[in-house]
Length: 301
Image 1 (tube, rainbow, N blue to C red):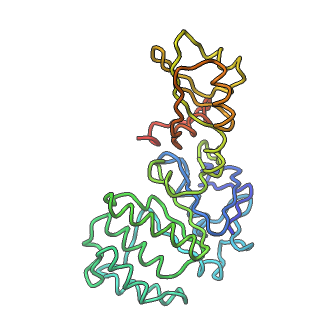
Image 2: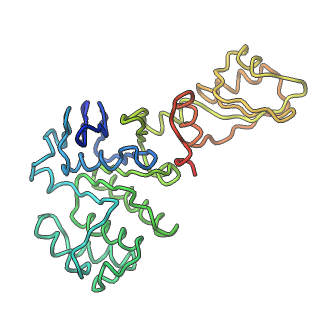
Image 3: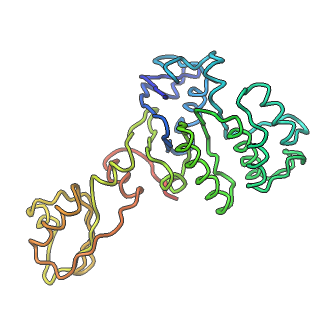
């Protein structure tokens, strides 16, 4: 549904994005991760047709997005820097969007506003930052977009509303076969809702993979041994060690391959105890990007 092919975007002589390529299919929730200033907003604005690419292509439904009213009526972009008409309430904004989006549904708008506990008659500029993001999300979903683009949309939401928004977006994506792209500088916000993750760094997408594929490609174990054992012993047993930590006789390691195959190889080393542990998406990313110049300090905080 979304296809980005070797896209480049510049601001004058400054190159913000260079040779970016990725695809997002129907019913997918794609998480775009990167620290502040990495280029996430530029990428989303180019997807939304706000910016025109300086090189390459951005296609949605097989068509170029920029200056394309047909495509723009089928997508909705929720920016990080929200804007509402002066003194507008949600009812007024609903009428405004209804004039641009033929699919805008007032009943859905009313139901969603009730779910989030938003008073549609009150001035939006008087809302908190989190409530304003909820209001724009309600307005966006009421247009029934086929493509929904969200820039840092969980910022300012309390845990309960954040969880509600996540569940709502996942339900909408799967139920309506919609394509959702959501950016964040914090992987914790995206790890439990996205089926696909893209990591942006150095003006490029440096990692683009399905979460299931990443998780299924390695496993994590904790094992206890009676004698001294080293990383080299595991590697000699045919285990593709990704990370290795030793605390006395307790070894924690993650390794490439299936969990069953790794466990069989571990047992050849005569452990006293073997325990399979969950491998977080953060750990997978760290392993994938090991040796790169990526600054994770603002991703896993």
